[in-house]
Image 1: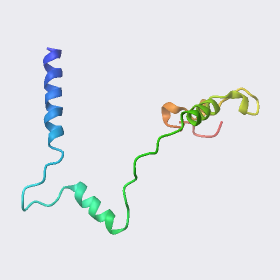
Image 2 (image 1 turned 90 degrees about the horizontal axis):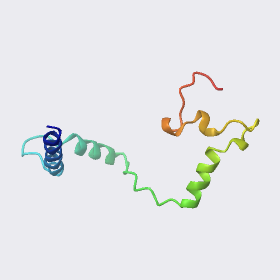
Image 3 (image 1 turned 180 degrees about the vertical axis):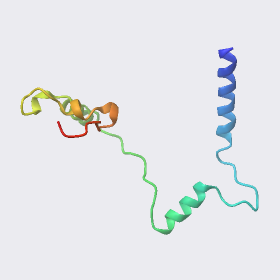
Image 4 (image 1 turned 60 degrees about the vertical axis):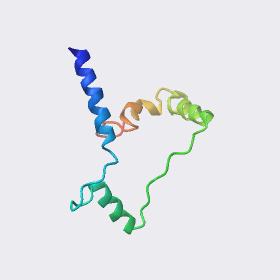
Length: 97
């Protein structure tokens, strides 16, 4: 039964993926994406390009600094203790610790 459901899901995704570039029939207003792009282009807003490749050495350095407890005043707490990567750098604390 689960194999059948999985097959149906994959087939549905394949069909929906092919519908991405379809144009609306004549007489219908353009899609919301097209309207938004048109409105934003009037203000000179351009889409953000792809991120440049990052130097693996700098990524490793940033990770080491984020989790290093030696950098704190008492040498017992790292930046990642409060700014958890799982929470995208935020925390749920009401006040500073």
